[in-house]
Image 1 (cartoon, rainbow, N blue to C red):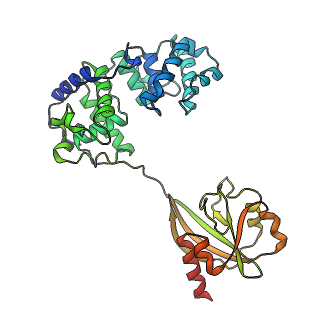
Image 2: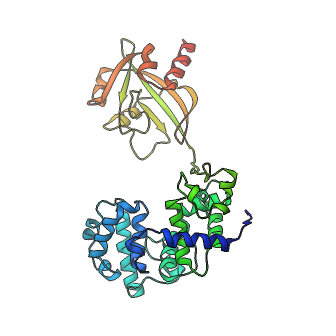
Length: 357
Ligand code: SF4
């Protein structure tokens, strides 16, 4: 646990003073109405403030309260979500409004436990709505608050990990101004949105004197981010089809998992995903051609795939032509493979093959 060795009360005093003087004039801040705050928080999840303001006003004009939203039909709600994207948010809002209407007589519930039962409402939204509108003393932790806290405390762990999120939530709870949770939470978010940006303007920051990253000049390298991606282990088998004049078939196919934009030999992936790699009948065709003499076993990685690469060569029979009908393809000489299939794998295959010959 990082020791917070400065006065939190003093930090909060500076923060609040700055917020009261500098906060943006936003329509959902005009009154402490849980419905408006809920709508704005959901819209802001994937959209910047300036881009959502016009849609927000139109939405609130048509659906001014929970009851009017709960009684609306989905098509109309979606029409009023136009321009905001991620339409599942609008569908969840409608479900949420119906839920509140049926279970809480059109009033947003006041406890965290009850708020979390509303469809589409997670920890962040519940905490934001309850603290901002009802002054419930719970701290919010969105991306902006995470950035501010990580820098102030010089938190050197990857903030995208679940464990870091838990720790930062504890720090946010410790920092919470119990006497004014509404303004405190908004001030923390506003500081992250206006001053402590990815490229922060520390010179005008109200909490600069409390910031460990500023003192140690580490603010540009903090927070550390990056989702831990699990490697997907697969086998990829290139199927070389050789014509009578010793040329091999390359195809180009946008829908496949790898090499979408370049020509490559057709390939199969094990384990097979639900989705076919190729359009048309090429996948099923490849399965019918026996793999004789599989070679290679090179290790390779593409994005989050850890791949063992093999290749196999079969003779092409012109009767097979209809299996590649309509596909972008070309026949190339073996020696041109490196150029025609621009991947380090083509070189590895050529080198391996020359050793066998
Ligand atoms: Fe962020 Fe700089 Fe303020 Fe620290 S001093 S909280 S890094 S803006």
